[in-house]
Length: 130
Image (tube, rainbow, N blue to C red; front, top):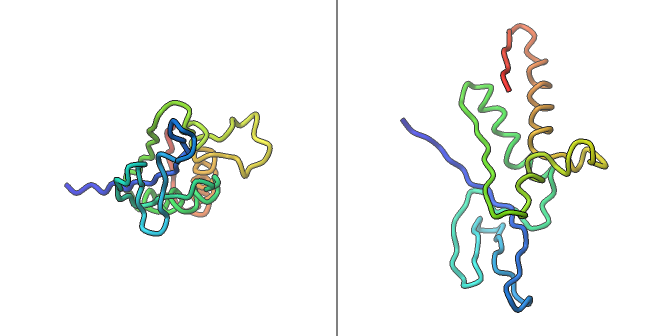
């Protein structure tokens, strides 16, 4: 059985000890992540440091909604060191604290898109379990 795994990286800027050099950076032109020592790692999507929530969602997550409706399993996983923005990426600053919908994370955006798309298929019966 073939499994496709895509990797997308949004880097929270981390400075090295002397504060002058960024230890980890993304190269959006060739989709690589570069360490301070010049080692590079290929990824499917190397997002810019200033990537906002909407760009992340429309670039990475939204296309997977179509795969879901085609019957494929879709999982989104965030990993990283504490304090690097995983929760912010998933939910935003918190639904009670978001100043605007532009700050919403992947989960509220995905749910809104999912239910909007379900409503387009009135001839089908849906069972959604969360």
